[in-house]
Length: 226
Image (tube, rainbow, N blue to C red; front, side):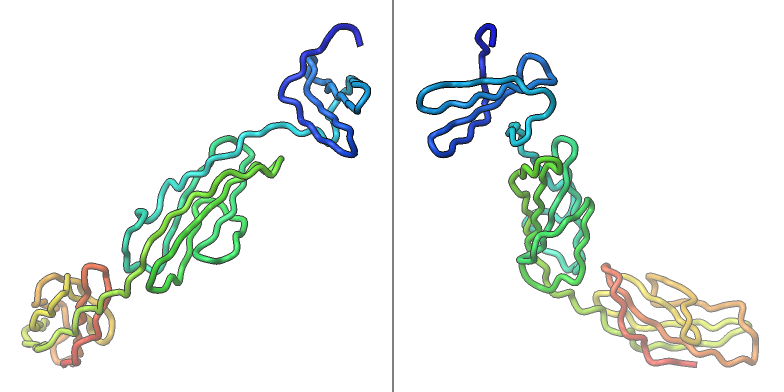
């Protein structure tokens, strides 16, 4: 070949005393491939892609962008994680706890998490080359859900003209109450009294009240009154 060719960042392989290396030439559509044994070095220029050539590719970095706070404690039995990676042409593999890694996309949701420690991890790799970056991991702990508020007691009903005035005793730990007539909810209230109006005189009605806590957990209904 005419003139010397500077070669840098070569992909090198060796076998049986022979070494080979390849790199791009100054022309973008050509490869320079050299082979050396104990006695000589031979180089040649190849057009197009070079089969077996190794091209350096930066490993993608994956980041968990949303989800439970790392190291947090929660009563939720479902967790959703969002993640992203640097670069383009990236695919992901995820796993929760000791489960096998599987292909996934962001966001990824896992349900049915039991009480105890859990760990989510996600890998990113370049789809074209298979180059993988380090995993990103997030740990959390699920604790048993608190018992719901107890059922309200002392429910009473005072009839009036086309209405019934209901009242009951407070339920500890409750954030509010659901009032039911004939098993169907007719109101939500934070009070311990509710006037049900627009009724038909001479008609019998049955009422129950259930308490709910700040997380929305519902108690058993109170004994019915009519």
